[in-house]
Amino acid sequence: MPPKARGKGTQKKKPPPPSADVEAESKHRLAVLEKELLRDQLALQRDQARRAKASEDQLKQRLHGLEAELEGARSEGQAVYTEMSRRQRALQTEMDTRCRQLREEVRGLREQLETCQREAAAARAAAEQALTERDGALAQLRAHVADMEAKYEELLHDSLDRLLAKLRAVKPQWEETAGRLHARHKEQLHQFGLNPLDL
Image (cartoon, rainbow, N blue to C red):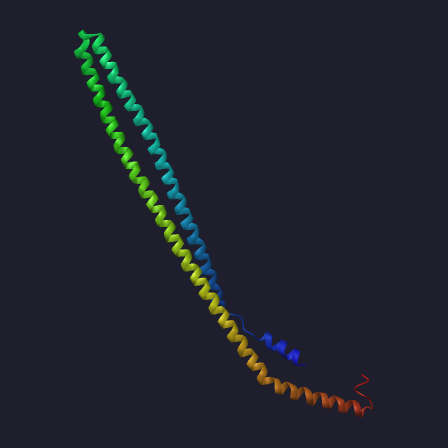
């Protein structure tokens, strides 16, 4: 009889309030969304950094090529000047114009290279900052989850303690009621001439 009564008491245990489950689920979803957002931001910044690095490499190659071309043009000009002195003035003007153009292009490419280097540095700094922010957010989420687990565990223990206290309080009544029923049934069996032990 007492085990059945204990089972009924266990069925009366109230589950955590639905609002707590909803809050926990919403917080979990928010954490997952924040993690995915940080991962996407980090991937985007890494892609930007890769692009900036690729542009930097291309500009360096172009710059080297132009410098080699400039050097070749100077050598060619000198050779032409030596071999064809009568065309010196026209060729010198042409070479000067070409050199100015190349210098301007080299200067522009250097500026672009510096810009790409600044952008790459900014992208690296942004990626590092995103990683730091992600780590901080994850640490906060872990601390929050640990705090929630501790609170739920404390709430569960409190509920179980209260349930056990109630069961202890009503146990004497159950035992007294069971004793009276047992005595009554025993008496009725004796009235019918039956021995309870035989049953």
